[in-house]
Length: 257
Ligand code: ADP
Ligand code: MG
Image (cartoon, rainbow, N blue to C red; front, top):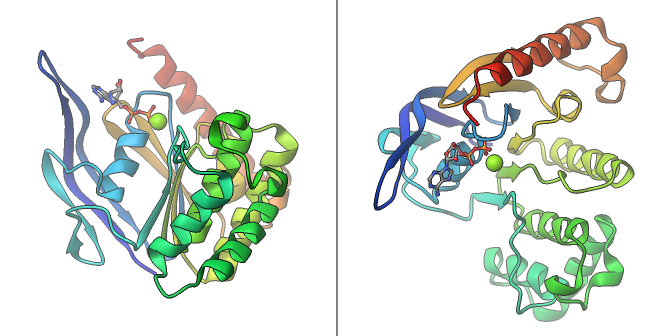
């Protein structure tokens, strides 16, 4: 049940010709066991935040700590579902999940790993695709395999970058429920979930962090012990939704692209 801290974090993308400051002096405390949603327009730095927690990038300035330990690279305590749900193209859906299982648990035998991978693919609704390669799957199916792979890793920190973006509403709802069940049953993983869908954030989050380019604008604490399925009917939730939608509109006007 780890906590995550951003302390005065800048992140700049540097290439041969220019430097682009994507995050500037970001400070954030993510509590252990919290389900935190990062929301904001495309390009505001959400994926950059996630990649920094994952240890795939290092801050240009400031630091990121997990339980007081400096993040210096990726580790088995964090699983990530990337925005582009990258799978190994040379492995079947099943083998992608088996690989993740055996990465984190070297003791597990082949047959056991395969049985567990089948279960996970079943859970996310792509059991039939077990023996197909990523190139033979639709975008939504690939995304679900990527989710199964992240579940296989069973890390105390789950990082999810718009994992349900390309899915139709029914499947999306099912996977949201599944993710919540998993998170609640784990008691409790720390989850950082990127979305630009406010309704999704209201269903999932304990806290919503709204970003504009480079900065956190505001955080919203959601009512404790709420009925996650009845977000629409709760006046407190409705008020938060309205305020977030206003922020979306306000930050839209100032956008450069
Ligand atoms: P989000 O996930 O919120 O859409 P990102 O974190 O992906 O935003 O990107 C934040 C900003 O950094 C954007 O303006 C984006 O164009 C820029 N950016 C992202 N990746 C790179 C990169 N590899 N090189 C240069 N700029 C980048
Ligand atoms: Mg992104």
